[in-house]
Image 1 (cartoon, rainbow, N blue to C red):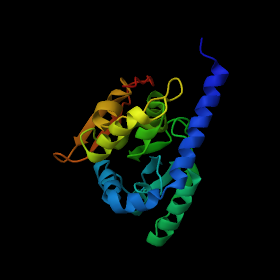
Image 2: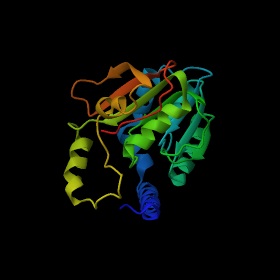
Image 3: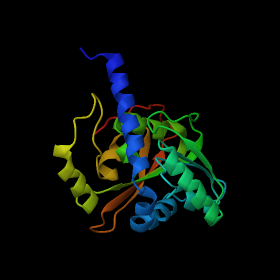
Image 4: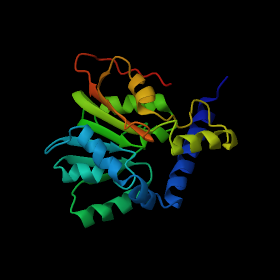
Length: 228
C-alpha cells in the first residue's frame, strides 16, 4: 500500500530538486541564445492582443511573458524558481515591459478558476513531474472559450533525443511522477479530454519543436485529464 505521507514528502523533495536545478544553471542565457524566437512565435500563434489576461506557466525568465506584455496583454509570469523570475524582472525592465511575476507550482496554480483569457507555456510545463495535474491546472485557470497554447520539444529533435538518452541513467521518479514527454500535440492535446478542442497546430517540417493551440470548451464542465 502506498504511504500518502511518504508520497507527499517525496513529491516535495522532487520539487525542491527541480527548483535547485533550474536555479543553478544559466537557463536565461540558454533561453536567449537558443529559443529566444519561440516565445514570440507562441504569442502570435495564440492570438494574444491588447487587454488579454495572459498567464505564462513555467515562465522561466519570461521568454513568452515579456513578448505577451509588449503586445499589450495583462500578463502574469509564474514559475517554480524565484531566481529565474528575478532575472525576468530585470529583462522586462530593460525592454520596457510591464507585467506581474509570481512564484507558483504549475501543478497547483494560485489563481481562480477561469482567471485568464489565454494560458501559455513554452518548453516549460512539459517538465512538470505530474502531467495530469499540470494539464488540469492549465484548463482550470483558463476561462471557458479561452485559449491554451503550449510549445514543446519534439521526440525527433536534438533536445528530445538528449532526454531519451539520459532517461536510463536518471533516478526513478517518486510514485505518480513522470519524465518529460516531448511533443505538445501528442501529450497535452490529449490530456484534457472533454474540456478543450484543437484550434491549430504548428510544426515547421523537421523543426525540433511543436506548438499546439486549443480552445477551452465553453459547453463542457469536465476538468478531468488523462496523462499519456
